[in-house]
Length: 342
Ligand code: GLY
Image (cartoon, rainbow, N blue to C red; front, side):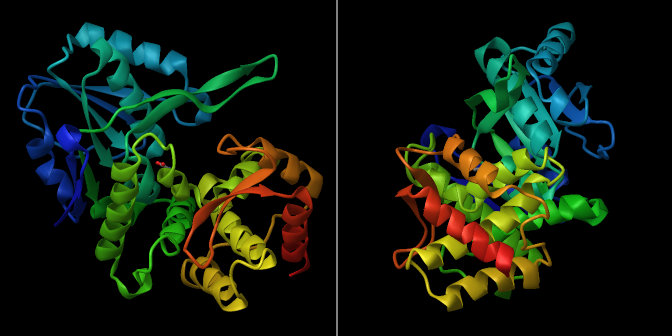
């Protein structure tokens, strides 16, 4: 078992990574807890025992259920169960479950402890760590969006039981690999030289470092969005037929292509991106057929992570990955063209 500490002062917590890690879950719960509300989804195997009275709350699958209505239903369930502020919510599932369970916990009685049991690779290396929680705002009159309502609410602990990875559907595996791929470029570590457990734990450690230095994303944490500017645009442009991690994989290649065109990195570094994303993780690196260049540039300009005028990207360079503002739409378009021609 590998334990990674997320250092956040009094809100510091441990992430346990390893086969069978779920058996250590009870040790992460607050000592005050007299009952546990387990938030999960139908298809997720539930093999945990925390030695407390528990009630299981099952939320729906799919983005439509990542909603304020689901938070209300959970809170009504917590009320019926008699969950107090001293008790604990346990989110068992992937990123959607931990985002929703975390936000319900942040809101219930103005904040009750939450512990996450991450059952997907995306959850383990990203979603369950760092305290971002929330739901989507359904569009009314064209206004709404993903993850618009939420809170920073750090968990009291996270379990990444690698046993869960054996049964993941291929698409989930691809999504996790897309998020993992970005970590290869955030530090100088040779992640390819590590075995699965070490590599996942190192991704958690890298994320923990970014989160602890910039919990609310006023600066450095935004670098975790490497590859995400095009990814968000692709998800919207394909009506979400491209899943997030699949879009991040293509977004990483695009970020490298753009950085190269802007003279920030050489071709060898671009090739390393192809090698990791397409070679090692066997993910698609090409833009999907039929995407509209103009629409992608517009969407990237509107990306919620955009910080100032022009387009904003996280790009690799001589000083490592950094936020680059004021990239011209022409340069952004040229990099799309270069990928389309490949
Ligand atoms: N997924 C990026 C972050 O947690 O900041």
